Image (cartoon, rainbow, N blue to C red):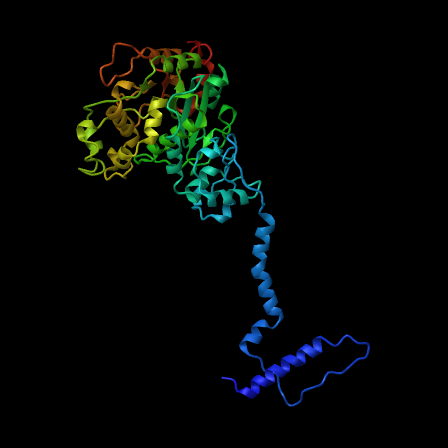
Length: 448
């Protein structure tokens, strides 16, 4: 504790400093009085206020970030426009991203969904507005980190769309991939056969993979913000739901939603395909009962994990590739109860195929008469027991193969209603089959 004498000395020293720094405004130079025999001694408070260089440097460093924020943040109010794509241009260094997610991308992934349709938190919008222009970080990589509830907001927004499509009725072609589309040139020729006002294209591309060559042509800027996908997990079914939600929000004219894989090819011309998809006014979903692996799949999450919402007799099996009407697409994105059951990780991974069970089970429970219980994607399971269908190699591709697939009849889970539906797509083709497919595209594939 300081005694009174030293405290008075401190005040005297302070007065002396003021006199030295602020001399009187006169022409005559007056010498300030000196106080002798008193050494200056400062209190803690006076030390804090003392304008020493170290204090000034610290204050400058503390104020510098605030000065940068206020000078770079615009005062204008952020507005949205229905046609503005959501592009997350956040610098990569601001987010702790796993190393496997940091592979170089050759093209930004853009969501062409109207921004005002999604309920995005205000703090995320602020991050978007502060992002530097010119950042190339794809939004599919950033959304899972910036906004953990993005899927919930997306699906919630999609449930508010009108289930009746507007004119003209369009078809949404939705691709789920982890690789550059190997048959992109074939699909390019396919989609260029008719007016662009009759279809839309959407691509779900796993962001943990690189895509070189990048998506171009009709696939340019058609990649939605995506998340990682992995077999034997609910991620493939989640990706399909994400595609449905984006397609519902993007265009009110989308009336049929077709799910495809990169190993798929078309079997007919686009005009033939559009007519066949819209003719019935129903969804095409393979819904099968009494399959050999049905119980193992139902109990894959545990013996009673699906109860009471999904009893074993209500559980169905089918192809993961379907074509849904707009009403059923809206039904899928709005459904929560069954999805909570199928979205649980499996205990028996070898029997876990949610993408082949969730959609057939849901639609069979809610609207079986609104569906044709068959898939329009041809596949050959002959002699296959590893969960992968036969892959057609380049040497097998020819007019006879395409015509043979066209002549086959889909398998109807309910026995069918007497009408025969054509296969419109086929899988699985090896990437090196592109050239022989292109040679017969105009004369065979697109001829009918």
